[in-house]
Image 1: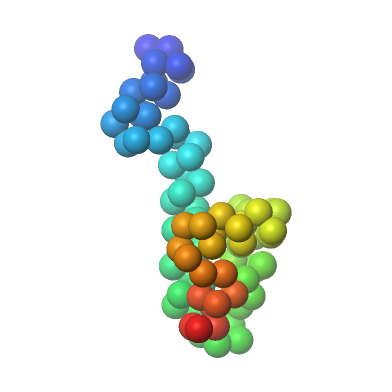
Image 2: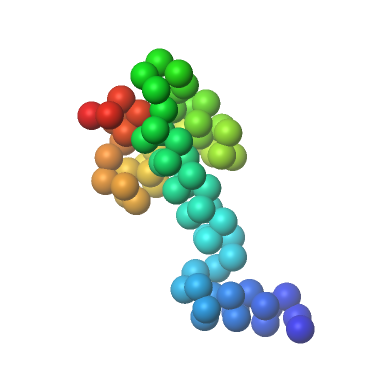
Length: 78
């Protein structure tokens, strides 16, 4: 099976490319961590970096698009 066939099969089965799926999982894990963090125990940038997001502006924009609020609001429980 070729790589392209594998990618297309994944896309048909899951509804997105393998890389989009990995990105989505990382974004969800960051959201989960921000949601349950104790006040003052971490920062938004620390969580973003932990999950592999190096461009914080891009992370914040995509986070807001996905969850409807800024990551800092999730962290503060606003």
